[in-house]
Image 1: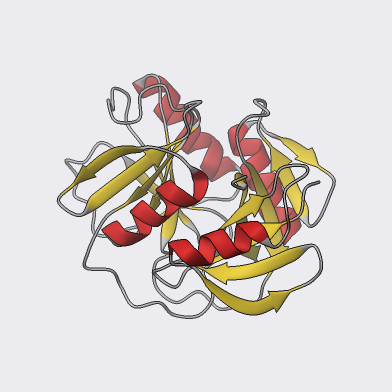
Image 2: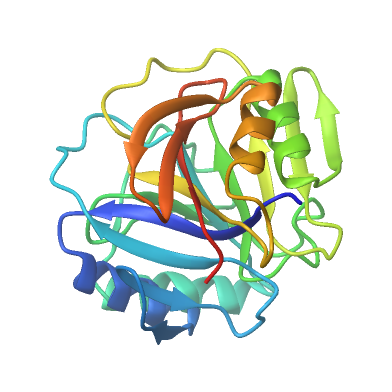
Length: 236
């Protein structure tokens, strides 16, 4: 039985502050548990988990959120709310003609507020996509790992989406910037109840993942084919 994507984890210098920012921006509720987390109103989606990390930020993250807008007014409200909560405008080379707005959260993590009418992100939810730097191979890996079908596979760019809909995971294809240190954003998989703790990591290795030897009895850290950290945890 494949693990489900239970959370996107942030390694944060100030986890409580970052949790308050994303909870306030998305309207998601705080949750108790391992680390500081916020959960979406729809239980079928993934949560956000904020873990302590002091790794200095060097360059752009390998993954960022694309937030959706139903109207130009909603886009303006989302941007205004992000700034009110401690976010800021940043310049990553975007042109004035582009309709999306590029911001950073209080810990410097980039995200975009996408303009209304974006067909690719239609009917995806507040977080339309987790947009990642990555090869086609890593997109195919995650399609098999999560058992999510490909919804885009063209010119080395890939995207997958749960059969239940919701947020898309996308990879932009080469060139992929060199990895520096531990990624600030990473995927967390949770095994379903009754799953064999040893079988699922073996399956992921057969698909191209690598064991790191890190973790404990309830969680292990692995690397995907592009060297990005992700964790696998027991049910609950």
